[in-house]
Length: 344
Image (cartoon, rainbow, N blue to C red):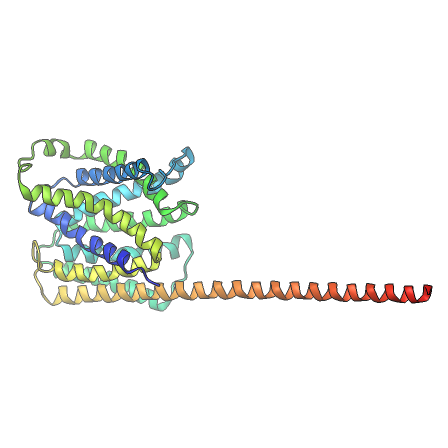
């Protein structure tokens, strides 16, 4: 049975984070994305320490081998998150969501072409094509088109797909909380290094003039706490339901984000290209998620049937052994009685 409260909380946080971050950049005029990521990661680690201190959960451990295993995924995560917020800062929310919807399709294609773990059929190929063409048509209808923003958004999709592929292989023996903790520990110094070497965000944070304004603290704290809570809500929704349910909630959230993103902040010019492009992308993404759902469901049913079949075979085998034992015991008893009769 589905756990409704975990789904609703995850869906709400996942839906609102794009708008909270955008509000921090646009309304509060705080355009320091790496600093925001750094504070969010710090909040996640602080939450783990507090939960362990009050004995609500054990603090995950991290070994030297974990550092080697999770180093590459954490690099991809840091680059993906940094580029995602850069893209959100410069793009309309609806355009941003349409571009990010390419991530599942690209991840699947990389699994097919690189890892060879999946088979590409016509339906999935059509969905990937629809999502990609939809994003291209949408960008063609964007009157405020800025190539740099689309390149940054595309790179964020690539690095997120690489992160998902590498973390899937690295986290086979870990729980979701372990992965979240280790990834945060490794990503925190990486984001700090990026912030120091490649940006002027430290000086921008020190010279920011709106620290005494209400909008800054509202959106900054909402973004910081929301980012940490979203990680926890994702873990909670996955544990109470399944990764598949979390994915489906994510698809529904994307549809709402696109709709509201058309009309808030920098409003997108609605024309035939944007309507067709967004519709193609959303339809392709929804069908793709449905195909993923049915494929995993069929695989789960098939594995259950195999398990039941093996269990039934095992029971038949035990029954056969029991019958043989009974027969052997009967023969022994018959032989014993016959010998006793002969002695008498």
